[in-house]
Length: 506
Image 1 (spheres, rainbow, N blue to C red):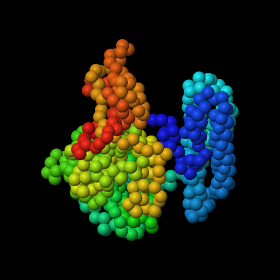
Image 2: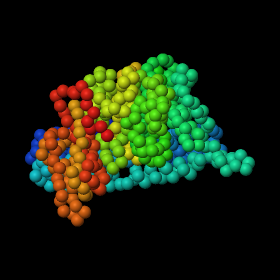
Image 3: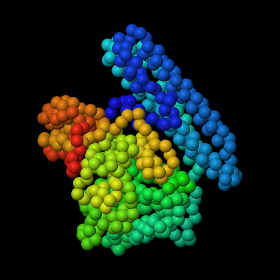
Image 4: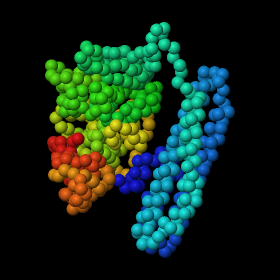
């Protein structure tokens, strides 16, 4: 991905004017490649001064706030005062996390633009301007990281987990309120203007106990569409979980029109095992809509559709790449359907791939029921990636705004997504040690070397070349390569959209 696109992705919206204006500096650089006019140096100095000033102001403000909160704390605080103190401290921690991210982004931007200036001008600009950067507080200090560690330590010291008294003779402590288990999700039964939580049983295990999934229902004060959000259909694809938690935590129920139904973990057995598939390894995203009298995963899928997703009018299915691979932030959607085409664009991804959905997928099963459904791929498996999750959350909020469910204005990215008419994978013909060269969300040109396989002794076995101009949707990051392994997922920008296209899925 180009750095200016990456910067747009990770920018904290309320601080956007204070970031290094990488795009503007690049324009100034190309306008005077010889640097004879001195405009680039002048603009660069202005930018780093701006960045440093914002850093110093935020750092000073955070230190003062931490000192103030320390002074305010005492063990005999009233419950209301303590909650207010905790809220202020939480805001401080968020400010410090933002400051650390902001600093890293601006330091990286400085390094990249100076490297580009060296290349474009043929001069060693970085030797002159680099020391200017490293002399400034935002670049030479790790103060924000140290302050964040200090604030987290203070939080842990003051806000210890409350001790719970166990019943006499019992070693069990109840840490969360009891949540009901149901076998049918009846949305009309949930109170308006509230967030409700239930377990929905979808199957039974070998002990005859229910296999349950968590469901969160947020009913607005007034009627409106029903939007469903599912995550972890593959049990190790986790980035959608914090997206759902933040969405539910941020929604204002007094202004919400309609209902949000969120399933943070769809594949409960796979989640327990930290694996992609169901308990028996089956891919739940290939057995939808399931069968009432089928195999174990088919029964689970059938009940998921009949007990939960049938209520949806719009559906966002949140995924990540598979283990051993890396993904861009991209959307798969049927772009011939006006509803899902609009949802895909509102999601603000890096890439949109036209895909009508393979047989057995949850998205495809929802579409067959008349539910407008898209698949949002949010980064990599078995981890939380804050920046990808933040951008995915903004996209979901855009969709809710478009549906008039929330009043928030839509967020428009600084760059338009690449829209692909189709995509496909390059597969390895030989086994060995794999190196995939381009990063995700970058362009490759026809004939460009995109991957190489070496023998275990270090000899080059085979090289792979881009068959045509394309964008990198995803890639294999596991060096251990067998013949037939996936290497690179390439998206093609075409002139027309096929009526049915399922290539590139997975």
